[in-house]
Length: 579
Image (cartoon, rainbow, N blue to C red; front, top):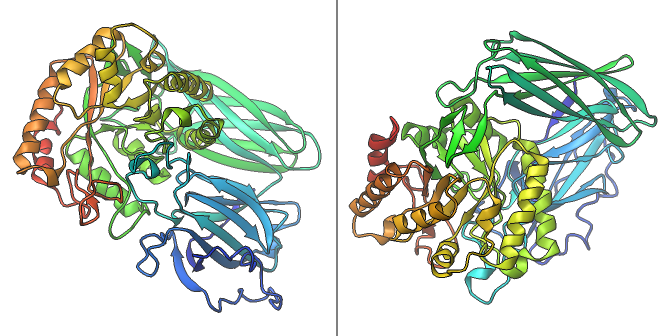
């Protein structure tokens, strides 16, 4: 049976809670006289349309806890044997959830999707009150968050704490035994054939152990089925999750590779049969190979050498909501200028951005909000636990997307310290355990390069533990530092993950154009540099020290309204046909 979905976007009631009295006054509970036949009364509450950002809502501009609630009629026909999942795409930054006054769960991590089993709290055939308390305050060792340290900067991060239910939300009904997800891995062989392995997570929320039959078919974008049938079975205990692993091979000519100029996609359509019941799940993927060899980043056996730009979340009209229209506008602007390989942003992107990149041929390195943490933070169990949890959520969301070609362990953390080296080694191993098919990296700050230059002793370095080296480099000694890195790790490709100049800190746009031309010349002369990505694609709002008096950090190739500057036009002329 196909899952039933109740869309939860649209109007919700909202109340900000500046003095933190919502719990004491039980804002999470229905009023006593509610008969459950009509929607819950909304007296005293405002209305907001979800997705919603209360930080940039002109009524609030609020940092703190905000409460969202709405009631929804759950159909009686759902049946007592079926299960209900409550899903959210992104809620920044931490939230607690109740249904009909009963606690459902809590989540921390503002950019990754999550879900809770809501079966016990929902009552089919009646109105049900869903309440979400969202907190967007900056906390120590959150992702992103404040860091240990005594500087003014350590208590902040340089983009806004957009708060609210920033993405989609839904209730999904399904059978007690259901497909939790698929992980699809492909490997291109020397003879041109392709190995495919589909790992299918099957959840059993029923009362008894059972064996389910699993059948997967691969179809192309036009619905044509490939000559490959994958069949198997999995036994899952009650209240547990099992995994069916199906594998097979396709001969050369039976499939097409996903690459930048021909981003060919396929679907894995998996059927789960338990007795007379059946469930279907579809996942999109592509056939392509990644390899780090001889200081080259190889996609389908060909060296990647591409430019990119790092996109900052936020827009004057949308706030922190990454709408389909905004994603489409931004990504089209990037691709039209030849900017096709980037770490993109400091946080996990939405599914809409990943799907755009898959369909249009972009290369992305993904990371969670692991920004600028200090040695005490890196050594803490608290930060390590949060990183593992949020990284796992992001990877599970993104690992079937062929546009995703690398995982980042963090940006500008104190990688030169003992704790930084340990973090890089341990988290690289953790990420590789979850996904051995993609390379890992981290974005080093200039202090890492200066230590490398100034310390003559060849001790352990964080760069030892990554597959390719990424560095944010704003120094004038670009060539010197890059050559130093290559001399020390000659087998690893190098990615310039950030460089640039602020548009509001130069005497003319020509200065930025000249800097770009100089960087392009440096990159062109060094074949072991696989890419370079400008900071930033767009101007972005911030409270971080050094922000302009208008509230923006004007690093962008385009402004906050996406109006291109002369540097964007110059890049477009130089890069759209490659370099």
